[in-house]
Length: 320
Image 1: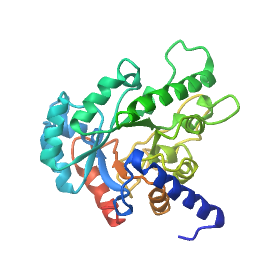
Image 2: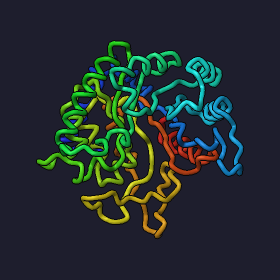
Image 3: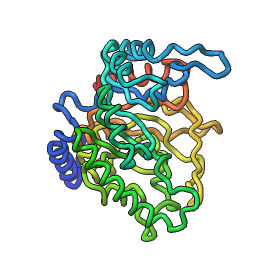
Image 4: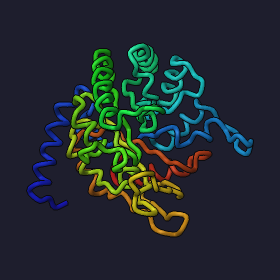
């Protein structure tokens, strides 16, 4: 890849930041960066079965074993399927998989809940706690505007991250598209994503969903370079491109396709999806210390097709 002077300097900055953040985020050795993992939401119906009974769930333990057979090394949770931390630890150990994170509601970072959250995760071997975008927005009736809310969230995350770090855990935030639209921006036009990570301490992690980032018309590489060394995980997904330009007042994405890496497909109306530029992304995320590529697929939840094909894609790119 040819780099201009600015890109070269940005990459050096990423590498330096990743080295400094390695102890906090577990960046690992260079040969271990960007390894394959699965967000278990991708196969939720494969685990639990479909409500209409057309698919019988395999259960978490057997599903984890199948994930390992594909070649994956770790999983990220989004719910625990009714299991205790002790049971999760046993199942992960039996399957030979690591836990690279979990998605939780922001409420579990509240001062009266966070210690219980940490206890549960440490018991099954996870140290990485992430709030997905849906848990981030102002409550109904909030009348003070987004500026006041994001400032409140910056303070909230800074405090919660210090509590988590004191016990060997990290916490952070995961995007969809709303973080990049004018409707949720600061009054001066600063995008929420920019404001949040520019004002939180570096121990607040950035889990960038590159599919939703591209869907919002953003370049993922820009954000890794803007906030280097803060991303132990990213979400590897193909769902980029708006059906129509994003309006200021509401979301306008419609990712109706099979989200298999390297096979972005088309929308329901036949228009092509904007793909993620993986060849451009890999060297940037490696320089910035991203340890896990967490595959998430919105469809194919009742089988292993999407995560299997996505693994093959990553393997073909030398990530496995």
